[in-house]
Image (cartoon, helix red, strand yellow):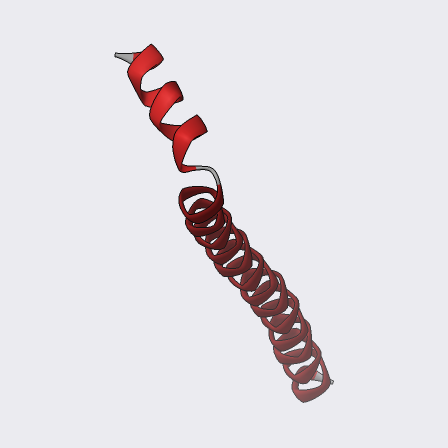
Length: 61
């Protein structure tokens, strides 16, 4: 009886941790993808729209 309860608690703890790890992993992957996409967009922007970028920078300052 006590062993069953202990095993049940361990099982709940493990399943909870697996779920938390999955969420954490998914969040990190999403964050990396967003940052990479932003980097690629900035590179594309600098390459293909230099005049517009220059105008925006001049207008900002």
